[in-house]
Image (cartoon, rainbow, N blue to C red; front, side):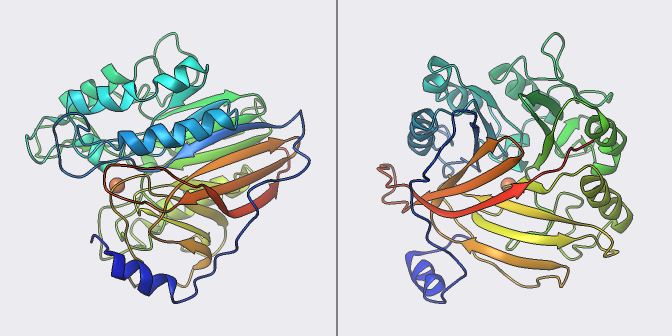
Length: 355
Ligand SMILES: [Fe+2]
């Protein structure tokens, strides 16, 4: 559902839980390092130049802020483009040129829009090949370091890498194998679980974060990272219990995702109630925004949300402490974007040695 200006006014008038945080944090340490996280960047259904279905003007503006804040790398949580085709992925990749010139790496993850093209249908393995061509040499591919699960076609699509004292796991849950079915075969979280446990068990990091495009529990979308079933958010309960227990066991405090085109931070318990993780739906950098829609499950505790603004995250790592800042701005017009970024949520997590 696409929202309107009137929706925005109506929602904000409800007084949602949203603290205003001063944009400047005092006492930044030299020891601190930072990385950025961009949410969905698809742009309308226009498949033509210059957009090719990716929000190039928003991407450019966010990248400028990433460079200004001297991040080490930028990660995107999927839905880079509106529809999977070669020019779309190439255009998205070309708009990382300023990052490349600043020596900042880009780590993408696919979303549902990146794995299919409803206008000009394409086989899922061809769509994946087009994506790989635009984003080559990702961790998990031959000679690139990092790790991918030992599953056909998973290399460089689901992957982990380490940077300084952190470890990052990016999980692709979209079609990768042409099995003759209309949508092809996608791996499930349960297919990845032994690799997730192995990666998080390694003694190569002090903290870890796990990313996927879809949510554990969406505010708007009721399909989730475990299932496309929109009628049952508790689908595959054992998979959910095992996954969230694994995150908790290994000290992963935050699961970061996109798909819902809003900012929402919440605490989520596993279906069995035995484990818990914080979920961050990291905003929208796209042309569309969604509104929360019931049902909402009792095992989720909503903490902070913001709707209808363009945003992104910067994670500050300082010794044993993470500070995650959510920045956002008014979306302004259609194809022009001159943001005045404000930090609209900021929270800290101390972490114990993960592993
Ligand atoms: Fe999505």
